[in-house]
Image (cartoon, rainbow, N blue to C red; front, side, top):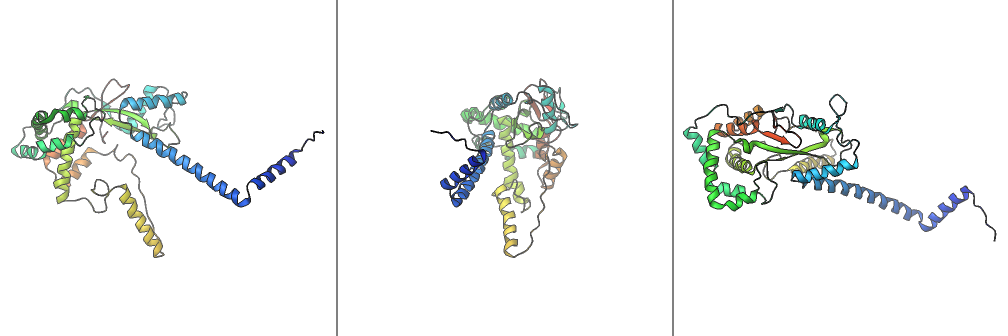
Length: 338
C-alpha cells in the first residue's frame, strides 16, 4: 500500500466537491438563511431576556448580587467610569459619585434633621381638601393596590404589613395623612429614598455612566398618599381640564404602543396614497432627572389644581433625600424625581 500526499489545492477542491454533494446549491442557500435567522433570534432573545431580568430586580440585595457577578467578569475595569473631561474614575467611591452627579444633577449633601421652614396654619379649605382626598375607602384601595411583598423602602415597611393592619391601622392613617396634606408636610422618614444603580441591557460601553439606571425604593406610606393624590388628579382635575388629545403619556387607555400605532398609521396612509411622509423625532435627554420643580408647579397651576395639593406635591419633591450604598451622608436632590 502506498500513501499519496494530497496537495493543498486538491484538498480545497475535494472539500468544495463534498459540500456540493452533501448540500445542493438550493439547500445550501436555505441552510445559510436559516443559520442567519437563528443567530438573529439568539441575539434578540439574549437582549430581551436580560432586559426582562433587570426589570424584575426590585431589591438592593438582588441588584448588588448582579453587580458583583458583572464585576467578577471584568475586574480590571468594572468600577471605571468615564468623567465629563474624558478621564476615568480610579476608585469605587469616585465611580459612585459620578453616577450620582449624572442621574441626580445639582444634588448636594444635606445635614438637615427635619426641614419645615414655615409652620403653616391650615385653613378650612385645606382641611376640606384633605378630607376629600384622604378617606378610609381610598386608603384601603391604595394599600391593596400594591403586591404584598414588594421590596420595602428605607423604613422597612412592606405592603403586607399595611394590609394586615386592617381597619384599626387605616383609622389612624386617615388622621395622620389628612394632617400632613393640610399642613403641606412630609415627614423625613417618608422622604428618604434608597437608591442603587444597575446596568442597562444591550449597551456597548459600560464606562459611560448613562449606561446605568437607578432603582429607587421609597416608603409605601408615601406611595399610599401619592396614589390618593394621583386619583384626585385623574378623577377630577384632568376630567375638567384634560391633557392634549395627542399626548399618550399619563393618559388612560394610551401607552407607547398606542403612540407607535399612530405613527405607523400615518406612514401606511402616506404609502397607500403614494405620498411622502416626513417625521421628526426629539429625545429630551434626562427628562425625568432634570425636570425643574417650578415647572411642575406651573403645570399643576395651569390645570387648576388646588393650591394646598400643589404645595404638598412640591414640598414632597423638593425635599426628597436619597441614600446610596457606600455613601455615609444623605443627599438632597435639586431637580427631577428619583
